[in-house]
Image (cartoon, rainbow, N blue to C red):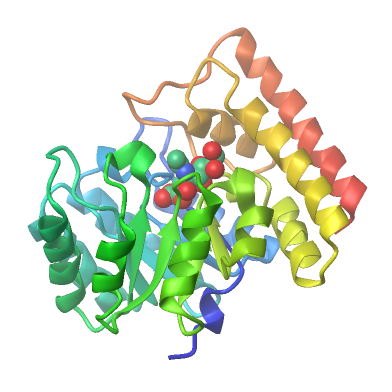
Length: 303
Ligand SMILES: CC(=O)N[C@H](C=O)[C@@H](O)[C@H](O)[C@H](O)CO
Ligand SMILES: CC(=O)C(=O)O
């Protein structure tokens, strides 16, 4: 399989709501077009950033559909189908296949702490429900499940597994997964704060929750890495990290700060759904400062 379409900057797509907090077709498509125009490679739809955990099946299907209608054929589309039950995940997987998505992905099962055997069975049942390739999502900070090398090796025996999106913090995990899986496999860097290190140690590509807030900077970081300009790669990573720390410093959830920022950057995707909290009061004024940090970094590195 040609994996080139998965190599590049792939923002994790945000949940797009209207002012009443309902999934908005128009705003979903606006964000698709905004990111397409920025030059990203693809979209990772309905993951953490998509607030998947707080949406019902119909809402998640609607988002998958609106995104496909807006940018299918123009961007590589990965559908995150992780859901509380295998049944719901399979329903989403089949729907993503109908819509023409390029790949599926899923977090491990949530809430109950299940053994490797159950996690592997969950992912395998999703994979077997469609013809689409599958990307494992390892994100121990939020799921409490840390993918072992042993479980990983067992999973990659299935040829439908074409990649892993690794969000654990040790960059060495990326190196180990890449070493185990080889060239014909995509390791996606998870932590945006470590994009450059992840790429250097073996990640082929990246999927991240803050990319859509500053796609220009991630695209530039990728340009520096792939051209071997590590001095500038290090510099831009530092600026990206200052911005991420600022995005996490306000009184609401990071996704809310990002959505306020996107409004200032010209695209309105509403706010976040509870229990995530919106940014309020004085802190709303601070979003402008973060926008300035991004604007300055874009100027500094050029487009
Ligand atoms: C734990 C978590 O949510 N990780 C995301 C996915 O890998 C990242 O993209 C973060 O959103 C990003 O690195 C900011 O901390
Ligand atoms: C944060 C991220 O990459 C996701 O939405 O899954």
